[in-house]
Image (cartoon, rainbow, N blue to C red; front, side):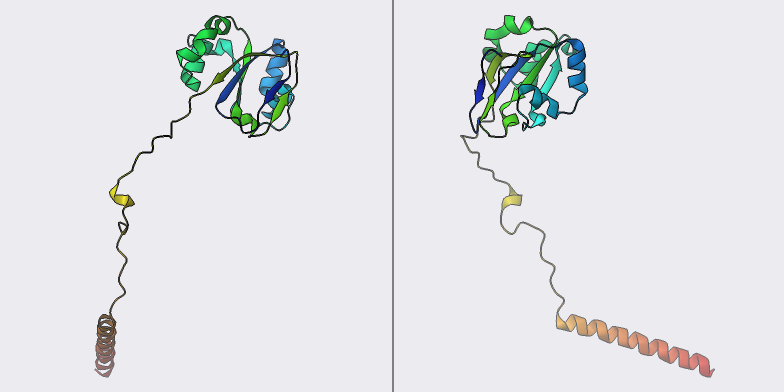
Length: 180
C-alpha cells in the first residue's frame, strides 16, 4: 500500500482486494500458517480471519478473479467492470478482506511493501427496507398441539376400582387353587 488505510468504526458492506507482493515460498508459508497470520500481514493483530481469504488466482482457472468476485461475493458487472483490465492482469495471490473482519472497530492499516490495495468495492447486502408480512397458520396464537387434559376424578376412581376388582379376583383364584 502506498499510504496508511483508515477503516471507519462500524463499517459494513465493503470488500477490499489486495495484491500480495511476496515470493512463492513466503506465500506458501502464509497459506499454511494459522488464519491469524493474515491479520498480522495487514499490520493488525485483532482481525477476524473468518472474513479474510487468501486466493491463488491460478486456482480459479476459467472462472478467473472477475468471475470469482461476481459469483462468490455477488459483485455485479457494474461494480467490477471499471477494474476489469486491472483485475485480469493480476497474477499470483490476492487477499480479500471484508468489512466484518475489522469487527466494527476503527482501524488504520499501516503502509506495507508486501501489499498493494487494488480496489475497494461496495457489496450488496439484503434489502430489508420493505418488510414482508408473514402469514402462516403456524404463527397464529393457539395453533400448537392441544394441551393434554388431566383425567377427571371419576375416571381415576373407575381405574382404581377396576384394578381393585382384578386384584380381588386373582387373590380369590389363588386361594381356591391352594385349597383344592
